[in-house]
Image (cartoon, rainbow, N blue to C red; front, side, top):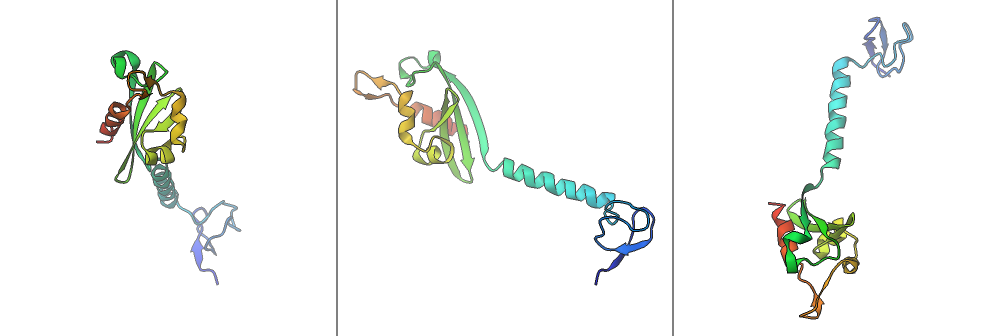
Length: 145
């Protein structure tokens, strides 16, 4: 059996949890302002928790600043570091697409295919391999410190 409580508007006894007061028609007659405010605070905290599960820092970088070390077919990029608990995930964003600079980073925040970056990754003609991404990985990881 439901406990009787006082309507916040007309002060008459009503069933706890009633959606409308049968005496005065007040909606949510058992919820006071403090309860409404606390409910709002809880919702904001929960939403902010889910929206901020990663710590993210970024840095814009440009071809002109790297000379021969630049490893991409575009002239600018953004380095990003996601911090998932204690794991740092270095990412580079090229043409609006995120590519992880490690396997974990690519799986969590990139294309989920380490070969996807190949469309932007330049060859080192002297070595016959792709250019070194180490400098970019190190710089992205510094953003998580």
